[in-house]
Amino acid sequence: MNIPISTSARLDGRIALITGATGGIGKATALALAEAGATVIATDIADHAEFGNPAIRYAKYDVTSSAQTKAIIADIIQRHGQLDVLVLCAGTITHRSLSESTDDEWRAMLDVNLMGVVNPVREIYPIMAENGGGKIVAVGSIAAKIGGVASGPAYVAAKSAVHGLIKWVAKAGAAKGVYASVIAPGPVETPMWNTVTQRAPPSANGNVPLGRYGQPEDIAQAILFLCSPASNWITGTVLDVNGGMLMD
Image (cartoon, rainbow, N blue to C red):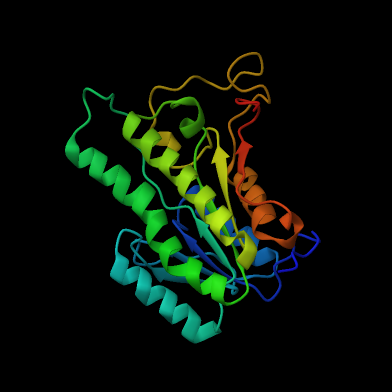
């Protein structure tokens, strides 16, 4: 397969599916991809959501359900005849230490953060491979690279598994035009991050060299880059977007 040279960060004519699209990063990503020309199917477990952009259609979808995964992807293919971009933003966090963690907590972290990636990727990867390619971007975490920031071990383990899975997809899919990469955000001011109580304020001389926590748009624009033709010679990467917290 001839891999195209990188061009502009436009997504005109692309069909994109986003999970976790009512969260801070997911919603910002839906808006960014739509503004770049994509038709976006934004999904989450809420009954209803508004985005204010006619290029975005909302659909209720639980990423932990294999049956719902099959159904929503079949619906997208029936409606549009293609699915070019998958962005995996669904996630949840826990803060308990290893000794305090419970079996139920581990199951919840793995169900949403890991199986919530496995289910759609497992369904979409062969479709993209057969149809000439596509781009998959998963939201991982700086926690998976440094052993946690303010999260517990179950979250760290689940996100670490996501990093490994996406690298496998990137290697397997490269010859078929299927790109797969991870965004690893540092702390971003979202509803999920606001549940973290043990956090230090950002400091240019300390934990965040760029002097502030991230905003959802910081992550969304990096996701757009990896979803677009601007990144046509990038796959299997874990892109750090963290204000300088980790310089890897």
